[in-house]
Image 1 (spheres, rainbow, N blue to C red):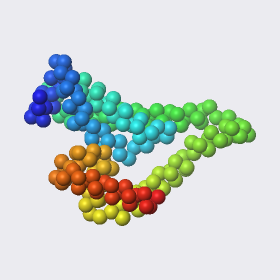
Image 2 (cartoon, helix red, strand yellow; image 1 turned 120 degrees about the horizontal axis):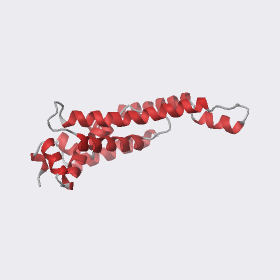
Image 3 (tube, rainbow, N blue to C red; image 1 turned 180 degrees about the horizontal axis):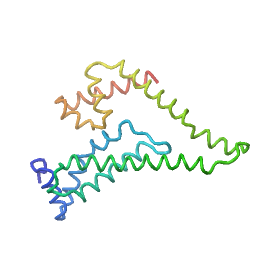
Image 4 (cartoon, one colour; image 1 turned 120 degrees about the vertical axis):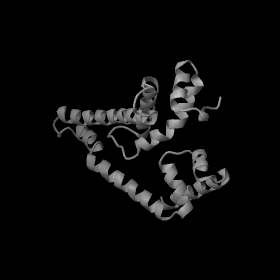
Length: 188
């Protein structure tokens, strides 16, 4: 079945009637949104994959709870559910941070000091700054075409999606990605 000819409401109705392919289509369609929602989010103790997983949980929740007759489009509802799910992860991070303070012990215990230093916020910020500096250096070495592809990769688009967006042959996009990787390796 060609789901691209249907709107989101119709696809969700098909899924709720038992068509699992409709669910697969919606997940593939909205995966780039999950990656976009993840940008600029950080939570101490959680990885990028944790945010992506929470995003998928939010998307599944949106698919199951969306009401067809609502004023909001499915896209808006899904984005809200994905953001809320990722925000819960950030709240968990804050609870962990406060838990460290509430359960604090004497710093005389060197093992305890070592654990605290591993979660040092200044260290995390410094690490993030180093990563941002590396990204800036990479971006400064890229051509206009490479920057365009890199921008879409950074936003979470797959190479196939980039081919469709910029309307260039798959081989051209693949070669561009390989050049970007080579330039990044030279800088590291």
